[in-house]
Image (cartoon, rainbow, N blue to C red; front, side, top):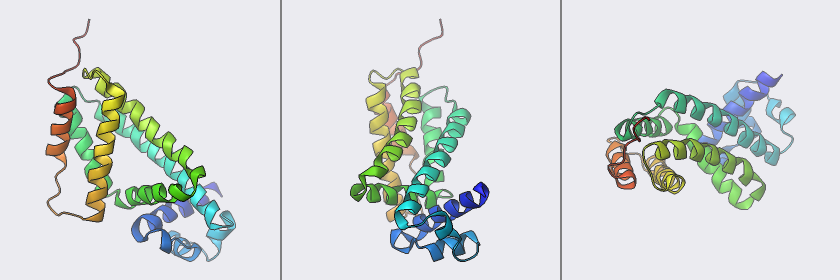
Amino acid sequence: MARRRDEVLDAAIEVLGAAGSRRLTYQAVDAAAGVPSGTTSNYFRNRAALIDGIVAHLEALERRDWEEFARQAAPAGVPELAAAVTRFVRHATGPGRARTAARYALFLEASSRPELRPPLVRGREAVVGWGTEWLRRFGSPAPRRHCEILLDYLDGITFHQLAFPAEDFDPGPGIAELLDALLGAAEPPAAP
């Protein structure tokens, strides 16, 4: 039963990200999930409940993905960090495009439904935590602030690429330039 609910929520994220909030209907989600008509409404009695379910499911998926990204990235220096972040942005605007677009749609939904903000904020705070540690390790004098600047920049270029896709999209040079500006020539302190 929980597996079917997750399948419905995965499909709802795809519908929201690919078609937008106006096309997020029970029928569209049922079709995308390949489940019998009425399945989505059995799990979520109204649109607000469906949106709440999407937010919670997206938070869990993104936490899992960020933990895996952080584990795999393990950058040894600023160039490796820039390369890892670039790979993440390329994934978010390529194979992960629908999920990324769904997250942005939820941000807009949160402007009129403040109760959605806490889980969305929790997701960002988890990322800020990981990023802050990396930037601290690389000598940032203000790692949390620098991480927030980096994430705001990444949101901006990601959003722009989703809205106005460029075939020659290459976020790498901008990411490297921003990290260099934030960290200067800072490298991780030598091990004692």
